[in-house]
Image (tube, rainbow, N blue to C red; front, side, top):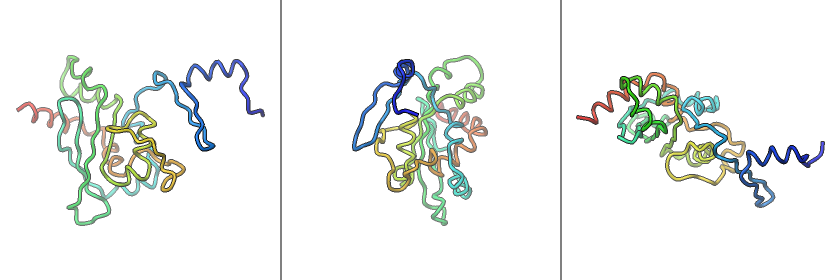
Length: 190
């Protein structure tokens, strides 16, 4: 096997790659954005490693708010602080919000459609930042807020998983969230 591309392989490579850069002996490839669909909540949950799924079990969450522009704010218990008084905040932005909310149909049906669209996520727990979830979701174009371009070379060099245990807990229940989201939207309109 050689380390070179044939001309046809090179042409195919150029259809999907925006740029290739080298830094400190490593190669970084940037792909053209239009090739990838938005990452859904289910896609993110499928990427959660088994250790994180096990650690999410004691975590409880509440849907705190849903903004008019489609950002749901959740509060979860810590999971490690057993008194239940320590909380982290998660935000999930629904990328198809404006388009789906403009459609005709019941509010519940619209929300169910939105949950299958792409999402951007974030959590303010230290694990999201330092164990690589912020970096990984940035690479997947699913990071809510400021992008993180520093790989987790110390705490998660193999880049296992997609999100922290707090977001994992919420994403696990995504199928049963529509009624709660509808209730929050109606509460906002009062």
